[in-house]
Length: 140
Picture 1 (cartoon, helix red, strand yellow):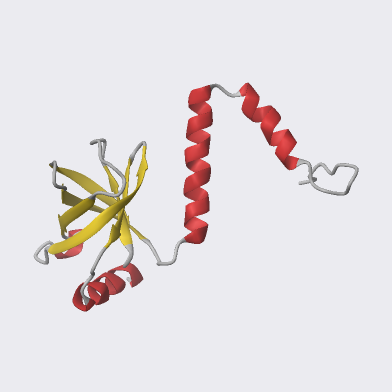
Picture 2 (cartoon, one colour):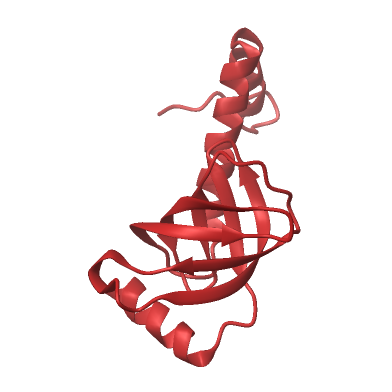
């Protein structure tokens, strides 16, 4: 791909992107922004993530409901849920992996991200036992 270059020798990609963005309807701009944020956050992750599909019970001080974990690491989870949550709220999670339903995990976390499709929860005070168990799951 040949990127446009301006007179000072710098890439002029940003002005070109802005031209496209101005032509896109607001709803599509929001979707694009979300996709770019997801892509960028994947590049910055500290922990190896694993895609999964596990039902989870989520409890905060003001509500309890079920969602689905779509990816997990020793640092946290992303939970698909359309329920309204607030960033910064503490949350208790109860779930098991599909291949070991007899091993229920009870983990505390904090909501650190909210997207149109769900929430990112960072684990807090993870025991060494759970950390080792999650590492083995994420490496398999």
